[in-house]
Length: 216
Image 1 (cartoon, rainbow, N blue to C red):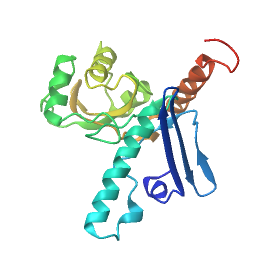
Image 2 (cartoon, helix red, strand yellow; image 1 turned 135 degrees about the vertical axis):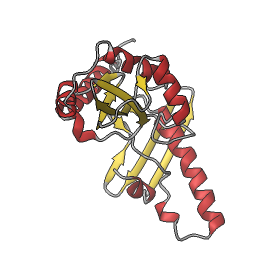
Image 3 (cartoon, helix red, strand yellow; image 1 turned 180 degrees about the vertical axis):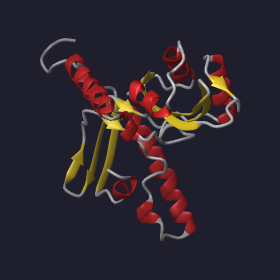
Image 4 (cartoon, rainbow, N blue to C red; image 1 turned 90 degrees about the vertical axis):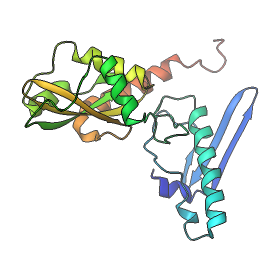
């Protein structure tokens, strides 16, 4: 479901009350009400339908739709990777200098110490590197000892404990140097590991949810 399709929704409704939040979004024949899992990769509000409006109306619509997305995806009780934030609707996106500071504190090497290196992106789900063996094989260099723990610590530091992020690295001469972080990783690099991880998230939530008629 793209942001552009969401902008042409026939209905957007969210009700907040003592019993929590209830939302319904209707896009064509599809009704989104209680999803089992959400992977959010929305960088802009779903305002494509308003692009031809006069500036004042377009800006107003963008602000209202941004507020709706923030409230809607924040209130869902299913696993959401990544929940939107006011700074970035796609999830954790710290300032580059702040990200580098957290990387250094987490034990990740930073800087420009490699003359000739290879780019590699780590796809990290809830602090765990997905498909690490294949990533290391493509990079031609094994990951340093304690590297996975440093990545997990970094994810925690930037608020990505329950998020899907990409960590950009330059690899060479036996080193893995941190280059940046993105809430929009290249998903094919994670392969079936990502699919398995997301299925496990959905199943874990479903098994933990209280059944109707059963006291939690």
